[in-house]
Image (cartoon, rainbow, N blue to C red; front, side):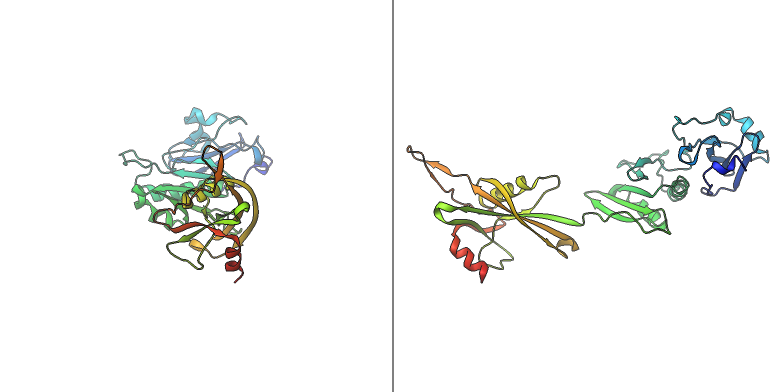
Length: 317
């Protein structure tokens, strides 16, 4: 009892038939007819437990005899040992964030020794899930390329569900604590947009556009969605340039609007920013003038400098 009290409570992995106990060495493992997936050392606390893979054949021998046949099984793992796994019965996985593991299926033609072969995929995935639970992992992630989409029904049958998809890759996930609420966040809960207030005070003009579709009012401020990894100031300057051909400088954020139930059912953060136009130099006397807006082909019907009073009246009414 002294030896077992410091050990992680075992769970049966895969189709394991039971546990073996070495009373002399004070160790136990989880046994399958031809495999032992883990070996627990009693000299380690629960937080320090390391796992070693040992293989043996089930022939009615005692655990001491079986371990004696395998010199490697007599090695006691140290704190510095990395876990070793039996990859013949598991899918290749890596440690992932927030105490999870991740399986990444490569986008390549399957070979005869493919660890993700369709004939053994579901069995290996089930064993890997049970291994993750034994390791007290929080979640298992699975990335599947479109070329291996035939494997998706097997993952679905074991409870994995889509988390997100991008280009030719789908990512599935399973929360491994059925009696606890999932802490896996939704993917892309928000989209971020920017709108540009570009005013030229000397002329009392504001830069406006009219879209080719969805025109709720005669004019609107230029703007659009922020791209992945793009800064707000970069995004709003880019959007103005794309829609109007006018170069601008970012000055400040004027406000933000938070709206729900927008595109794809997601929430929307819309940042209204103040920009100033970059004036064009004209003539030898160095006179500067407002650049002439050029509407973006295919998207914008018209781009123009609008009298600020006209724009204010339109918004207020």
